[in-house]
Structure formats: structure tokens, C-alpha cells
Length: 443
Image (tube, rainbow, N blue to C red; front, side):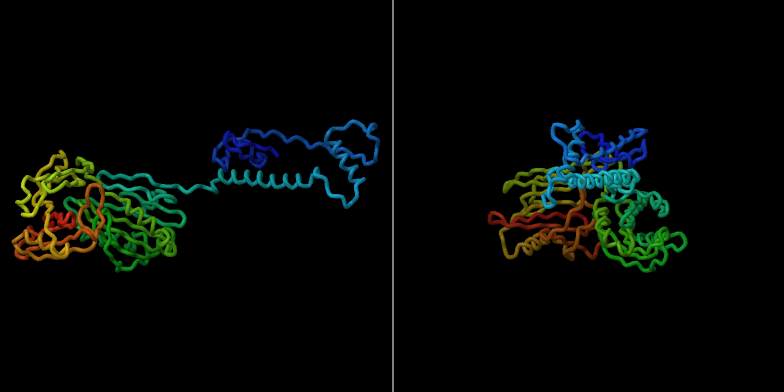
């Protein structure tokens, strides 16, 4: 054997260099350091010929001079000639040493083999693709799907998608992201036709035997309402029967489709990775816009002290809150930020009011009745359930809350321009009922 130690000073691993061709580049299986062996491995020292043991008894003072090892062997042989067969073996027996050397040889040879397998690529750590992907032209960003996923240019070419494709090797699965930019506001009416054209084309599509009717459910993507479609079919490149899902959304001036699919038996296994990828997608500030940092603004009034977490920096305190509500303690008017300059200008019909009431009956019912009474123009009131809709704040979507009530107020005899969305929350504090509500044009 030619025992070689890993060159890493902090790594104790050793293996037999005789198992590896001279000059080979190997990787230590313990610390993963790669290094090259010498071009010619040093020859192994020849084993010494065993000396013939003299088993005849001889006087101590007439024993010939021997090496230390030979003396031990001779002494051992003589004692075995003299000792009884029932005598226990001496501590110096070589049997345990032979067994230990055999075990050591197994570990050394095994370690060398593992090192060769690492060099050959048999054992490879799964890549963790968490690289950021940003697309300023579409104001879109996301991260790679994570461990076990790699970018897949071949699939991107097959699917002809603009952004990116990813592949999971074990189990096999795919993610493809398609996007389209529109001249004006994106319309979701053609989201489904694009899905059918992408996966259902019998001549150019990547799937065979796709159902004509794709089940649709409501979903969320990029913080806003989206459509989800399920499909099944035979994936042509791998000849594998697959399940898949498509999330499609129209927001601002872009349309986005996220296709995820895998073999039928492995789709559920990869579903959490698909969802994590979609949850990590972000709609950035459009190219050229001034980004605003999340900020907290403090307001003092006659009745109290308020802190507002103003995500977009658009709310400004107004002088006389009673102009909006006789019970109001605070009135904030909404502004919009000009994308190219970052300057604020008034935003029509966007307001936030804090009113202080004497408690009467159930809190939510009293608060909603008070808010509706501020508008004497009538209108039909309808409470809204489910997740919030529309574009999310600059720092991400806001989850629905049972404590926050949303309702619309629509005016049948108008073109809809006067319709409102109203959001409020009510708490009891200091013997008073505090109602915070905001409204803007429904559109």
C-alpha cells in the first residue's frame, strides 16, 4: 500500500494511492479538496523474508544475536513449545493486530474508492439554484427554485418562453415563465387562449393528449387576483405522462404565465417547490420610477397620538378633519407620486379618517352605519369577502384580515365613476369607540 494523506492540514483523511493512477486528480471525500497525485507513485518496500525460527531450547547466555522482531518471534515460538495447550494466549498475540489491519485496509480502500467516485461525478451535491432573476423591462423579479433545480435552456427553447425555465432532476419536474408586454393596461381576457395555444397545439405544442377543457380556479400571483388551470398530457420530449398547472395574471401592462409540470406520480411531491417559486415572484417599480422606502409617520391631534405606516409615502394630514366627519379626530388626504420625478400630487377622492364615537351596540355595526351616514347620496352597500384585489403596496401584498372590513358603495344611476371602495377597522379604547376608515374610487 502507498498511504497518502489529504494535503489539507486540518483534514485527517488517508487512502491508498496505489488504487489511483499516477498523476490523477482526486477529491478528498471528507473535505472535498481536489489535488493531483505525483506522476509516479513511489514503489512499495519489499516485504522482509521471515527468519527461520529456532524452536530448540538453548541457554540464555549462548543465544545468538538477533533483531528485536526476530527475538520476539523466537521467544513466542519457544513459549508455545513449552506452555500447556490450555494456557491463555499472551497479550502480545498478533491475531487482534491482523484483524485491525484488515479493518483498516477496508476503510483505506473504501476511502480511495469514494474519492474516485467524487472525481468521476458519481456523488455530486445537488445544486441550490437560488440566484435572483430580474427583468427591468417587465418590472418582474424572482429567485431560482432552490436545491435540486437548474436552469434549463433546452426546455426554454422547446417552449419558446421569454424569461426562464428550470428543471428538477430527481424527481423530474419543470417550471417555465412566460411574459407578454401590452401597449396599454393588460386585459385578462386572452390569458386562457394563450395557455391552450402553448400546451394544446397538437403540431407544435410540447404535449400530446391534452384535454380541450382545462379546469379553472381562482388564485393569486404577484399579489393580485389570478387564474389557475390544470392540465394532463404526454410530455413529448421525455414521453412521460404528466400533470401540470398554469398560473396566469394580467397586471399593469404585462401578462404573466407560470407553467409547472411533472410526472403524474411525482407532481404532488414537487407541488411545494412550485408554490414556493410562485410566492417568491415580485412586481417591481416600473423602470424609470423613483422607489420610495417604507416609512412611519406620526400625527398628534387633540384627542390622541397616531402612528401611520405609510408604505408608499402618499398620505398628508389635513387641517380640519370635521369637514369630512363631524366626529373625526384625524383626516389624511391621499396623493400620488409622479413616477419619473418622485414628486407628490393630489390623488382624487382618496381619504383616510379616524372618528371617535360613544359606544352604542355592536362595534362593527355601529362603525359601518356611521361611515355610510357620512354619504347622503344613497347607493347600494355590499360587503366584500376574500383576499384584497388590485395592485399590492410597494413592499408586497397584504393578507386579508378578519379585523378589517371592506365594502363597496355603488350608485346605479351613474356610469360607475362615483362608486367607492371603503375599508375600516374599529376598536374600543378609553371608554370610546375609535373607527379608522379609508375610501377611494372603486376603479
